[in-house]
Image (cartoon, rainbow, N blue to C red):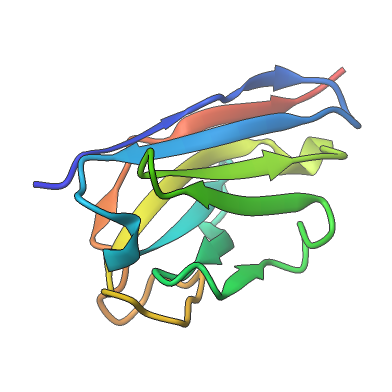
Length: 129
């Protein structure tokens, strides 16, 4: 069973920054597409960003485009989400998820059709003054 763990959440003031990390017990990131999702209380889960197994394709939700950046370190098998210019509406539990897709050059932050079978426990991000 693939183990996924998020870290780096917390409380930040509006306009501030946070960096989330997602590590997994895998041999190589090149076998997995990775995505970040978030869910605020009373709301549906939202796909935030994804990065393909090849690292060539990266996508963002319109709500975070220009403020969030997804990246990865293949030596550490870790994916990051750098969040800048944070807003109160970014407050949510953030989840990292892995999809078995060796060397895929495409990603989508949509957890449908069997995608993203491996999920972390989630980590709280709170943006508040």
